[in-house]
Every structure is written in C-alpha cells, then in structure tokens.
Amino acid sequence: MSRNKSQRKALAALNYDLFQPEDLSPPAPATLYTTIRQHQSAAPAVSLSTVREVETGLPDTSELYRMFDRFNWLYFDGRLPRVKIEYSTRMSSAGSYTPQRRLIRIGRKYHQLFTDEIADTLKHEMIHIVHFRHGAAFKAEAVRVGASIRAKAHPSLKKPPKYIYTCPNCGREYPRQKRLRMASCGLCTSGRKFDPRYKLKLKLKKRHS
Ligand SMILES: [Zn+2]
Ligand SMILES: [Zn+2]
Image (cartoon, rainbow, N blue to C red):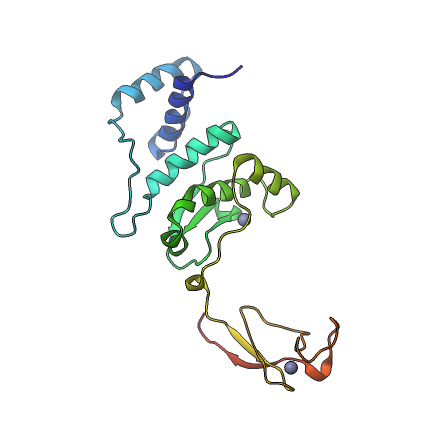
C-alpha cells in the first residue's frame, strides 16, 4: 500500500510539527487527521526556496530539519527517530553523528567549500543513526540512498599536525595528528617491518590543536 503524495506531505508536516516541544504528546488516532488539517490551515505559507544563513550562504538549521524529514520519508519510510542537527564551526570534516547525544553535526568550513554536498552529508549522517561504522551494511545503505562514503579533501581543511616525528637516520619529518608508537622511517626501513634503528622520534608536540 503506498500513500499518495499529498498524504505523505501532510504526514511529513505533522511529523515536523510534533518535534516542537509543546506538541510532544502524540494525538489520539481519532484526532490525527484533524490535527493535520489544523496544521495545514495554521501553518504560514512556506516559501519553496531554501532559507539560507546570511553570512555563509548555507541552509539554516530549520532547513536542515526539513531536509532530514524529507529524506526520512523518501528513503527510510519515516522510521528514523528525530535527532538534533547543528552546524559546527570548528569541525573540518563534512559531518558527524554522536549516538550518545543523538546529534548530527554539519561542518560549516567544509560546506562553505562544497555547498552542494550538504544533502549528501546529511544522508550519510542519517545512515549513521542506524549503522555506526562504515561497514558493509552502511555501504549498501549509502548506495541505496545515494550518499557518499568518503568526504572530499581540500588543502584548507587540513589541520596543523599535533605531532612531528623525525627519522634519526635521514631526518625526514612525519607530521601526524595521532601519536605514533612503533613506527620506523619509510625511506630507511626496507620492507614493511618495524626497524628499531630507524624508529621515529618525537620532535615537536603542539600544545593546542
Ligand atoms: Zn561516516
Ligand atoms: Zn629515514
């Protein structure tokens, strides 16, 4: 049984409405359609164009929630729970999902470079509500809903390294975000096995990331 378009729209609108704190208790089944009708008559005309943030040109947060609802109905049969969505100014990645906080974060920096990717990122993070890791199940879902698995790279998104390691033999530097433990220089070590003679030494540790 498939719902027709207007019914689906009305339900999506209701779903959106229920998210408002004052409407948290679901209506009794008998009043469901009354509520939908009330919502339709009471709601101000929503412009079809995307509401954008003034400074960044990105969709504002309420638009992100609308996109979430749209994708939820389009791809997940409306079954995904509503989660919080916010922009992150500090994050250099495209997006993240934190299950403990039921929070999707959308990276501002990333999407100022790749404005058209916002829907892609949101879909990707929505899959994370169900599949935490990028495993086979995640990948199958990504294909199904048309979301990327990896975000794009851009030089301006590179974080300064937290650690810089050097080779005691050739002096080559290895800037890294994470600590290296048993690592030897890739140039001096033959093969892929760790060689203690060329063990990388920590040269610099940044105090602030
Ligand atoms: Zn991911
Ligand atoms: Zn070396």
